[in-house]
Image (cartoon, rainbow, N blue to C red):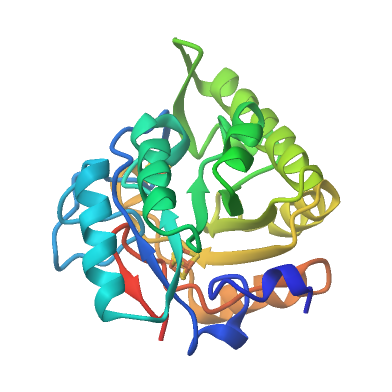
Length: 266
Ligand code: SF4
Ligand code: SF4
């Protein structure tokens, strides 16, 4: 196991009993639309990636951080993963600043769709972010165009193939640049039967080539436009993981957390 992976429970299963994480849901807006995303489903009882009971202001996030870390000494990682895209929201950086001023030991991570990653690598480094997760569901725009509805970039909005090309291109440049600058990159891939299920090994090979250290293949949770697609079975997921494990190191203990979870991953 590479030493840089050691300190983050989502990158390294060996530390899930020792190191906890807190997600602070300060990133309200998103700059793309994934066909499986329904950000209206955000309540206390719902358990799907990105859900949260309330979007916090950076000041509220700092209070939550102070409150939870005063009771839970395991928390070492501060993650921002939603409910929108962290890099698209200035509140992400304001939160990092506030927490860094309060606790200089805190380690930061973000989970992003990758559209702005290439542009913001230096900014992340300035905030001492160490870990980045990029959700990559395709490395080919012909496949990506069936997964994304639109993308907003530099005040322009792109649809269809153009959006897909932009997303695929920016994600790959972002992963490469972030890795080159020393960030530890994990790639999350949502396994979507009939859409990208035949393409998973290509994603694994490409992101490895670009510098990603680990990959996490997650089953589709059928929401929104993809609500009629059946969730992949355990055996389909296992087969995809088995094939990709020959290409890149996999993590298989992801809990598909809400964007306001805190504590150990167990
Ligand atoms: Fe939803 Fe995340 Fe996709 Fe944005 S990037 S549409 S928040 S799943
Ligand atoms: Fe870790 Fe996965 Fe939860 Fe993110 S969603 S905190 S990667 S376990």
